[in-house]
Amino acid sequence: MAANKSRAAAFFRHVVEQGVCFSWGTDEGVTPWEDRNGDTLLPLWPDEASASSENQDDGEPGERVLERPLDELVSSLRRWADADVGIAVHPVDGHIAGTYSVRDFATRLLDEVPQDQRESAAWMNDPAGLARVLP
Image (tube, rainbow, N blue to C red; front, side, top):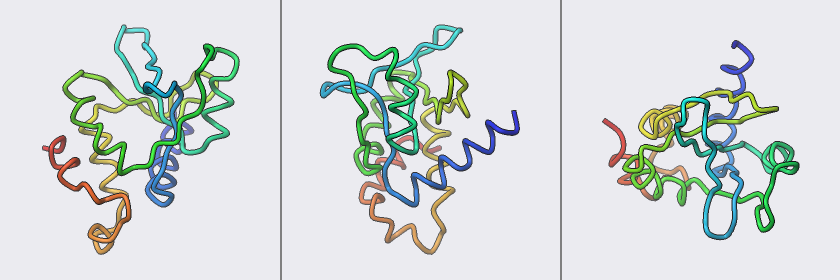
């Protein structure tokens, strides 16, 4: 459990610093996962290698690692929230570091940005996107 929390914290730090995360899917979008409760999750990884490693054995034809710049990701949050989709952070060997509602995911992203950098973070060009999903 502590390893998962540590991996989740590292995920948020890394993607905020880099301004990008990675998913798995096709040109048409992310391939969702379903957890044991039947809930739909969108898995995200902090780097291309992790996303590829986790999916290469189960991938369908046409599926590949997708780079997700945070500005584009933020613009998708409202749609995901409306679809009641959760976000699975940094799955490794089938173990998810953390599962978040869209609102909690957006909050964690924003919390990782130092207050004095929120106006200048390159991926924060759509603060309204975050505001639409935050309380």
